[in-house]
Image (cartoon, rainbow, N blue to C red; front, top):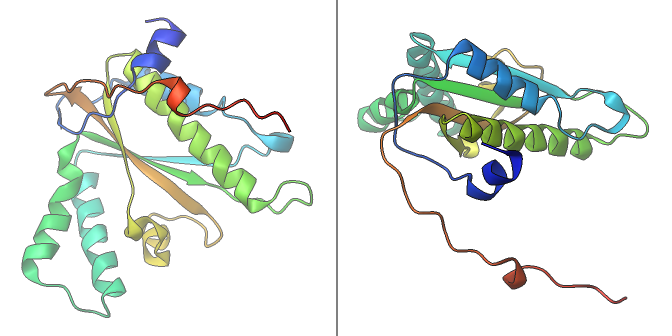
Length: 186
């Protein structure tokens, strides 16, 4: 698939099954993420791969973070639901911004760079026939999630990319550039 076709047809796929991406597909996905815009070449990215049995640990971490954010309260049904979420895909990539103090590159630019990398990774997955959806939520901003994933206190999680084989397809939304673009005349 050529680059423009991949960019024009990328779509989130929320119904994913085995198999997950191969090692070579993952490598292509990481290489794409590493080409994101990067002011002063700080390389503010960290990617964690969660597969196999690590998904169970990740689900338990999700439930624990929710329990902590709810002042220690979490009913069993919600805990079970959260623990099962990582099994919606065979592979999960945690995309984080590794923040470096720099006088010319504020933290927000580094977070945006990590987000741009995540988007490039989503397109690279699509270009290889790998289904993907970028998931987020309040838990990714909680310090206990960062800590549980072994990230530094100053780092920021920008998303969880769920990857696998699409088990269903959905139509692309109809969006027209003219509905979003204006030419500013100053």
